[in-house]
Image (cartoon, rainbow, N blue to C red; front, side, top):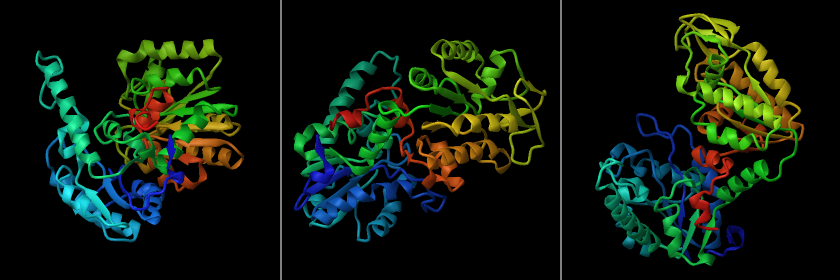
Length: 415
């Protein structure tokens, strides 16, 4: 596979799949430019070599139709500022032939949102998956997706994928487009290389003890990763909303706490499997409960197995926090995905902050720590600890699928 550091982009037009799906406020202003800053090393390498840049990305879920609120024109000036040079804009990603052809070395062209075309995602829109005509519609869409990718590829001499956040999708711009470039003219960007290496550190170069912290509200969305990690970790901390599914499965009273009633048997199976594998499964013993889902709710600390009626667990309690810390600090490999509570509310952020601080302390003592998934990344940013962990992943779903052991189409297409 071609390595970007070894490639000379002089005189070449490079089409780069970036992940500029950045959050915007109601006025179209970027509220977090982490993803733009993450792509800069790749973009600067191409420009400094004397190449020209064609940037393509999605934003939001426009479902194959133009949506002014999801137009990448809103971020053009921010990209220009980050790169320190003007950025041209193509208002239709499928009609940018002339703009791409006229690009001179050192110039930058940003294409409009790829997902304004249904061909980018490659799925039929408005047709039920179980309907009789779905198979034919899906086949037709796949053919259209190839043509869509072929047009994008025609703009450039070389393809670079630097969008880890969409690497788990077989989209036109992340996987199919690679077919239209020779092996020596397609590669991963610096950000993608770092992401893949970080996952490899977690899965293939484990320093022990290995501790994984899985949070969030639902067991069901994490079952694949939990099962894969069971084969690898020494300690598995399960926290956040899924705490109460486990508590109820063990006969606990959880009040109005979030719970997946159809996953109670699964929770018990996970506990049994951990026992069989010799994994230290750590579940919160207490919680901070509120009488409503609000930052202003009345609060009380109570056992996670004895939450009063009308109350709901919204954060890990002090005993749980101490327990988590004791498990995290000795670790040499750490993975964190998902908060310990409703960290968006200041009064219920203590558990998540304590986890972030313990990970930062363990990292300072030599551990390799990988933080991934939107909420976990938001946590370390909120608490000012992003620079105190080894790696903060830009990919949510892509990171989880990689750690589950799945092949990522966006990576496989280039490798």
